[in-house]
Figure 1 (tube, rainbow, N blue to C red):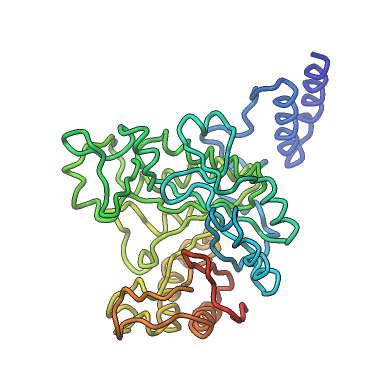
Figure 2: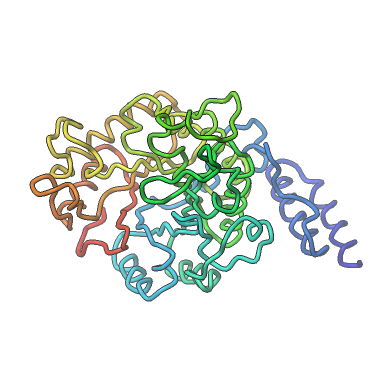
Length: 395
């Protein structure tokens, strides 16, 4: 009780300051009070809270203006918690790469480390892919790696099975699945918003500097099946539901000092809003610190950027995608986020003979050059197996 009372007194004295000092003190004091009482007495952020400590106008501010120019790689939880991590750390140590995007909630919906947080255990299903998350974070810090937590949001088979009413259902009550047997949860459900943001908050507490949300959308082709499926919705459009989540996440996480980024289809920069899946490039960009369009050359079809086979022309494809991205985002002025695309370090053999090429050093460097020629200095490399090309100059 003496500790509890002392903490209350400290909290009062801290909160008598003004401006940013006062706001920062609020967070410190709240943390001390919670620790003293053994439970959460004061929430350090509440639904609808906007901006950084001291920022009351609701507009986004970069919580990490001194962050490095990020050049990173994707790392699965299996790699992060397994033997492959050693070689990936060496790759970053030996090159100009400086960041890792690590799965914290994966494509199935599993939380990838053994969390003990009751709110997450209630809805989530932890796995031990990363056996010791604190040890991992210490290793990243030791190697001076900028850590980004990837959280797959609305593609969540695990949660859909646990909470069918939060998913999309057939007339017989069974959960809808795509061709790969995967299920999505409903972006209209604010319970889903809160669950994913709670995971993000834990990632921030663990030491991640940025939260990257992926699959921030309805299922592909949803407009063709929406009428035949049962799901909760309101008067908001699908675009508003998705962008509403992004805004909520940013408002909740920005005060914790972490950036918010979102992955988005590359073609979203080249077309009007994708109403079917609820993605509007500009609306999402307005509420994130970083936007990461997935501009893999292999994912564009014949004719894009005047290329018969975009996969065969990595420079031209990336350059065209960046031209469209700038055209889309330049009008939003100071609200324009950092553009940090995902680029391709894999071979798309599924495109068929004559329509793809083996990607390696030359193809990766061509994409980086296209970004640089487009005044884009940040990028992320995607390889699902985390096998990255050798001897690449990451300029």
